[in-house]
Image (cartoon, rainbow, N blue to C red):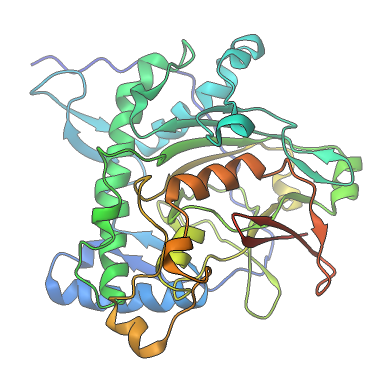
Length: 383
């Protein structure tokens, strides 16, 4: 059989890894390849449980991707040929919506985020307010895991088969194993959380390509070098494919900001609000932010690839009270009664439409904290 023809696109060259001595977070490294047996999954579940209930972030390795060869999969172009997807190529693909689409065409695919509570499409620069009148310098292009949910710019269309396979692999071979380990950590049946995250069901789980651009010295001063305020993600699990530009920080339990270190071919995983709700506060939605990179990387763009995961739209985000672990240890309800808990679709729409668009109130308790109330829940932003 002839080899499948891969569309030719420009190569994106990332920045070299920083040589600066940064204060990195000490995060667990979870090797998914060790989870092929019942005993192996039981051990990994304890490791994930500890990581998620302390830092709320950890690394994944052994996920079936290598630096150059992601995986050998059934061809997306024919029924019998095989193809190799390269991780480096995925970053090339991620840059196409930004570098190969004109500003005029981008406008046609801007997501009506504030009106619909959906990120699908472009989030262009200067949409989010950061601080001191300064708006962001980051572009997003967001694609539902069902890539045919909406139309796309011309340059992106030939790449949709590869993006679709990438989404499926991220869901089946990265997300689902993580969800199984987290369910085991709660002493629930393995598929409890997997069954809430269907691939062919109605949900907003999506691929995000995200590109940060360098800012002026004036903007850096006004925002104290913060590019995105400290926040929690609103979904269940966020999956970030590690890239070399240092900028992501998490708020540690000692109230200091720790950098996330780039580990070649690793995936950075964290929990969001919806997972914290479902786990009764056991799996923490950790505050994180994006800041100006260290000096040796400040002239480079920062290109990221994410898989943001949410339950099916109709899942109620109430604690999983059947968990023997939660019954022993106790849990926190963010709502007075389970029936008051929002559906995933409602929480997602409310958080998405509000982010970077609402006027925040200064906290009475902490100087650096700004607050808003969404669906009856206090949402905090750290500056």
